[in-house]
Structures are given as C-alpha cells and as structure tokens.
View (tube, rainbow, N blue to C red):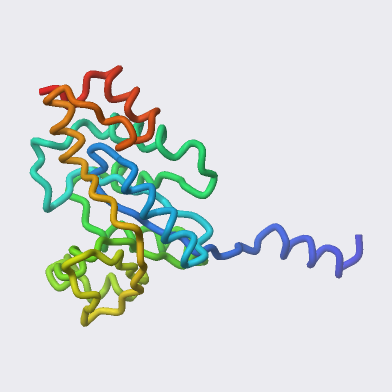
Length: 206
C-alpha cells in the first residue's frame, strides 16, 4: 500500500462526522404521545439527525414523591421509541445520579461529542424560566434552545431561541397518573406498548 492510500485510510477511520442532535429532557413519568409528537415535529422541521429523550435522575423542580423508579421510566421510553430509528435515549443524567442540572449534562455531552451540534427542546412555558436556570449564560454557549410554541405564551426571550410550531396536544404525565388512579382508560394517550407496561407492572395505581 502506498503512502497516499495509507493516509486516506487513516483519515476515513479517525474522522468523526458531526450530527444535529435534539435533546428532549424530562422526568417522563410516564412518557406519552405528546412527548413523541413534539420530538417528531422538531426533528422534521429543523432537519435533525436524531432526537434523544433524556430522563432525569432527580429533577430540581419536580415533586419527588411522584417520580417512580428510574428503571421503569427508562423502560417506558424504550417501549415508546423502539419503532422510530431517529429516536434514542440518553442516559447521562440517570447514570450520573443526583440532582439533574442541564448545564452539567450538556457540558459532559459536548466534551464527549464535540463534533455534534445540540438542540435543547423546551416548552414555550419553560422559556420564561430560563433566567432562573443553573448557569444559563454558560448553557446557551453549549446548545441551541428550541422553544415549542404554546397558546398563552409569547414566543420571546432575551436568550436566543429557535421557535417551532407543534400541534397542541393537551396530554400530560399528571393526567396519565390521575387516570390510572381512577381506573380510567389511557388508550391513545400513550403508545400501546407503554400502556401495556404500566398495567403489567401496576404503576400509578395508588
């Protein structure tokens, strides 16, 4: 093999190709069809390569008594996304444990994959709280924020935000939990595989 062929082969093996990655974080307690619609619409409209669902270990803003064990939340995400090759799960916060701060996570991911461009997806209602986020001025240097427009919330922020129109689907994890406690149907609110997992494991019945 001559020198030119050797250099070409080496470059092909070592070069990393950057990707446009969406990050949709949350407790996912449980994941529901609203989450999936948001992820698909952002992926399509922004031309992303993948969207990663990133469950948190201990969110700083959620009442912990409602968050079931991480293994069940992760299992339900895997059930929900298994038929979409452009959806995946990011386990960084679960593996790290403790309180989940977005800055710490995204610093870790950008250090591990500096070739990627990250798009951090949040609801339009959360945009107003960005000034209160931990190390927000540093976080905006690591990611591009994507705001999902919501009725009643002005699409504006002092921070750079890419705004995306998504069909409004009034489904929430708290609604799913409430219906399970009342023994009501959650069919079509969550993927059928998630519904099966919830019922098989008797989740949210108390």
